[in-house]
Amino acid sequence: MEHQIKELILAHSTELFGSQIPENLIQFQPTRKDVDGDLTLVVFPFVKILKCSPEDAGAKIGKFLDDKIDEISSFEPLRGFLNISLSDTYWLERAQETLSDTFGIKAEGSEPLMMVEYASPNTNKPLHLGHLRNIFLGDSVASILKANGHPVVRTQIINDRGIHICKSMLAWEKFSPLNEKGERETPQNTGVKGDKLVGKYYVEFDKQMNAEVQVVLSEWEKGKIDETAQEEYTKLNTARAGKNEGQLKEIDSKIKELAKNHTPLLKEAKQMLIKWEARDPQTYLLWTTMNGWVYEGFDHTYETMGVKFDKLYYESDTYLLGKDIVAEGLDKGVFYRKEDGSVWIDLTDEGLDEKIVLRADGTAVYMTQDIGTAIERYKDYQELNGMVYTVGNEQDYHFKVLFLILKKLGYVWADNCHHLSYGMVDLPTGKMKSREGTVVDADELMDDVISKAAKMTMERGHLDDMSESEKENLYHQIGLSGLKYYLIKVDPKKRMMFDPLESIDLNGNTGPFIQYTHARICSLIKKAGDFGDNITVSRALLPAEKELIKVLMKFPDVLDDAGKQYSPAVLANYCYELVKSYNQFYQNVKILPENETEIRTNRLLISKSTEKIIKHSLNLLGIYAPNRM
Image 1 (cartoon, one colour):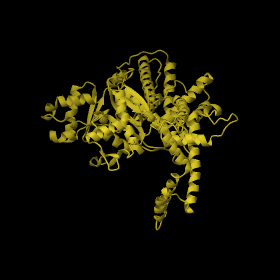
Image 2 (spheres, rainbow, N blue to C red):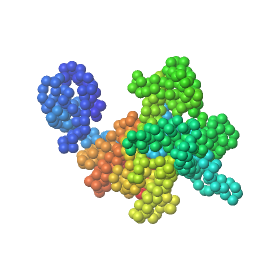
Image 3 (cartoon, rainbow, N blue to C red):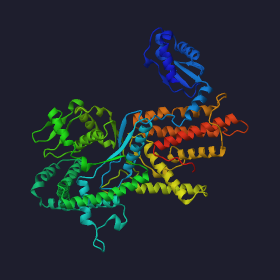
Image 4 (spheres, one colour):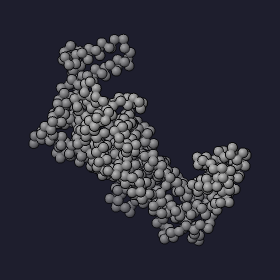
């Protein structure tokens, strides 16, 4: 209706105001709860043009609209605002529209192809709570973009190379105990999930290296220090004089980091990385074997989450891709070479800084790889119009630089690249740390919320006619819905605190609360039996009915906004608003009145539309909508 009113005012602008007015003068705002009306037109911009009071301006515009639009039942000018009430017939006709299976959904292919990157784990450790927020956000954004008409490629880049991988490999070689057959630990002979087994040795490496750090520091304090560390260590120790407690702590941290680089274990890991890059057969076989364990573990976790990918990229394949692009950029003058041979780009004119894109020894940095990977993806999908990178907000600067470099290289699609930046997930006990083994394991967390959902559901004791497999499936759906909804209902940009028990609560803004309302509507519709497909428009609406229809009508705009903002939180919180509105309707309106067939059918159809939109919204959030709970 807002669009219709805007078009009507613009078309009759000369008649109303004596001249053509700009479109931006026509503004709407939500109608206040304490006044009558369904939408509110802001009148203030027209007062000066009409040279009259706000009330007179509102009255003139209101009368004009009332004469032109049959659906307007009344209007009231009020202190610079025009409150417009629409007829019950209008709202019932809109309710009929919401029953369409395609209501709010655009045809796939009506918008350009998009790629969404998410997950992108390291292969030296299992997935954890932080990954869950990443994965649930990215997976939902992909679904929301698809509902907005975009074909979508779901992808990830797997960080399967680098010193962190070699740390796990070396620790497994050195510290894995041998069994009676002389075999080191494997997923097969231990029954431990592959990613967890590899992660165990990543933690073990850090433990053993820290022990070596203490030995190194002790030797240095005795004056036993090799020449490669002597100068830096002396400089740092000298700098301690006269420093306060905070400054001393920072210096000690630098000394410890220096000591790490001189531990035998880290030196050995660096040598292993050199061997890997040289494709040493034994090192490469160990890398392939242990990564295979991790991939199998990841696949199991993704299956539990209910997420899939269309295309996988591996850092071991892509880390050199950008080197040729850097050479081309040098020729074009986009990059420049320093005296030591390293290659940089100067972004100071854009308010950033100078950024290295190639080291002096010719090796690639992460930026080099990301430039090459982005271009490779556009070669793989030549119709691709944009990419969404789901990555934590600690990489905000990295992506600003990446997109700007791509733009300077002449890739026009760089304007359509977006960093879906999200805040970290904290625990009541503090920040998670992978090296110290203090992360919340994704598998364990999912098992925990599913177990809590099972206990909560069993305590209610009303599923006796369900088979055990059906119950287990339901517990899984409730637990995972609570976890997913809790992690994506918060604006992605915000840091958040996670409470697993709160996530599965049947009250408040939670996934299970929304699921429960969906199940309630399904039960109501099943109880009602057969009813018609068409809403009767010749009757009055109760306030709770009209309010529910209004919320239903928001769905297309909410879905569009969620896609434009790359924010599942927009859709999640709309879904909660819809559920609250339906519960008000359920409590205040007799849905199955006796001997009033038309009213009964209308209310059931409004319920059916609510059920459909709740289900569709939950599905776009990656959440299953059960028919029973």
